[in-house]
Length: 253
Ligand code: AMP
Ligand code: MG
Image (cartoon, rainbow, N blue to C red; front, side):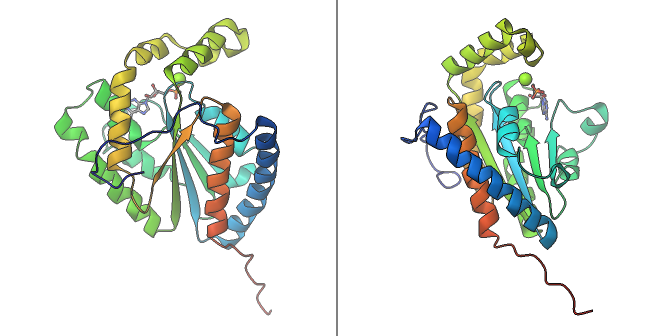
């Protein structure tokens, strides 16, 4: 990602697979899922760090699927998944980071945000829910907030699941056709789709303004589910490995 405030950003193609074959990806993912289970146990035993995975992307970009596939092997006790919906009246009465701060994983745990505080500069901006003088300063507030978390031992990994408009159409069609997927679909999804270009612009600003040294964005080509999961799993496994976690020594007594 370019540094903050710099010019236009080049996104990878949503269909990219970096030359990886699907069968190889599945095999590698299997290994990574096992590795994550082991690393998560160390994270818990060490109890000095938390890992926060932030998932953002258009409807049907695969946020839920990523959680299912990447974290399928880790102990449920050590993973906190939080889905951010429209704020309740109570949440609305507070600052926009209030509910987010409360959902940050405690030390020893992996937390996943399925949507996040970034909705407050995405959907909120696209739908004009607050004026620009309110949402614009949030980029800085978010960067400061994330820096503070990082300094408190939270490793932040932000993933933008980047799908094409064509792939979204295919996934919507599947949701409409398949009875077991109906629940995933709402008329609101179609209204959001019409705002595709506005979302693109809002996402471009997010990537430009909030790619920091302490909490960089990863743009994940997401038209192929298997590749998307592989990329996220690789980043997560690497982040845990970089923490160099060890089981604490048993006291003499
Ligand atoms: P879903 O992820 O499909 O369950 O939908 C959750 C909905 O809540 C999406 O339409 C989000 O845009 C919306 N949402 C999440 N956070 C906010 C927010 N801070 N302000 C307004 N809408 C939000
Ligand atoms: Mg939805």
